[in-house]
Image 1 (cartoon, helix red, strand yellow):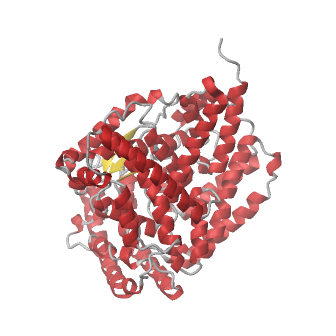
Image 2 (cartoon, rainbow, N blue to C red):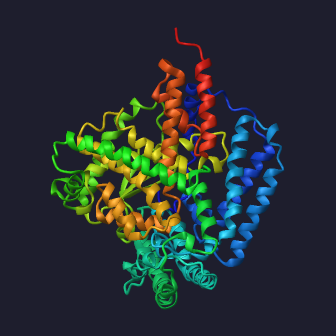
Image 3 (cartoon, rainbow, N blue to C red):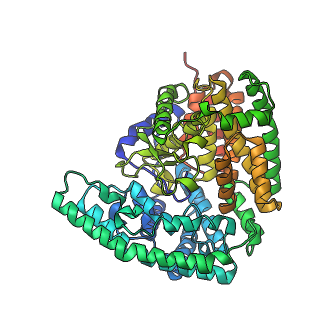
Length: 597
């Protein structure tokens, strides 16, 4: 999942699938909801859409498609005050008097709001630009906009005209960050000038912001298309390009020289407390950095032993490092062109689809597709990510794959990657979340990293009961991806809590996983830029797997993997503690249910 993606989907068509899932898991019809609590959730959802127009756009709500989020200091202070007021209002409800479903909503909202308020002290807004996200990637939102009517194009032109305001506000935040010593690492910021240069074009039609005007639906008259194109070119030439040119000058002359040499987030003001907070926030646990580091070391050793077995099964007689080198370099593991690579990804996705019934009873009704990551961000982006569909059902979910340099994209990783990012990974997780017709919108679109990414990593392992890992190289790909997530526990805590250098982290990653150098460097830089987030994957997967083992032991012959997987997804995204309570209750219901005669 991309960092800036705010997910969700709501469609009335999803209700039957949700009802089916409830019936099969033993969940009774939804009890009466507390009207005041649900009204509170609805108000907060609307506040979020108004304060973050990009989020509204991602949800398929077009009301604010003509504007960007106001990131002035005053607007940020207003949003923070709104969160504090919302937390106080939520605490005014008597939790004990709520129904079980309302209690789950309450607990989830409370967890989110408490942490939203707690993290205000760390002033993250003073670092408004990163090497994987910031104003230089604003054009990427066009990927999810409909561009079906004249108004859709006019709204985009208004956004183009507003780009200078966003860049001015970003510059102001960066200036405050300089004053406070709250700055990103130089090694990451050195990637940004090339990204900014891509926005400073001599020909407006070459601007990434112009892409929507290269295609029009037939319903828009040709004369109107010409008018819109001219307006777009004028907005880009008069507003977008000059603003980015000035911003690039400021970035290179004033900001970049002041960025920090130390990669650890603990080098920031209040940095140790910030990392402790982030570790707990992303994993939804109270594990310490040292505990997570030790879990990582243990998992690396276990997976490495499994790799040795699969290497032997593949008929390779050399050492494991030699096998890594072979997998990274032999031409038979790589496609020659981006088009060939995309076709291969699409074929893998289609191979997975018919096997899903082996491990699920409930299949989400929302479709998904496979797309290429846009060229302007591909060099600095991870191997793939998932983009959820629109909340109104007007846009399918999409699995985005990186086609930059096919010679560094091995085919043996495709199966595990597709199971994680597409089906039954993120697509199932988000689409099933939308199939909760009685849940408030914030619950249908919630995204807790430990749950969501833990499910994605767990989904990679479902390829075994689905019969998708018959080839030893595909099995090694699964182990490589699992090792990738175990290594994260070691290098993320290593860099941010134990003083590891970037080079040491890269070397450790390379020693333990067969991923290519391009991927490894991009990944390490991602962990530097996004401290703590990468811890959630393995921690979440370990918890989901442990709950499955607990259910299997408790239910014996009555355990069915399909029912367990459905039960994990039927809550939507929640903290791991809430998921554990839900599975315990599910196990109790399964035990109490009469045996079929």
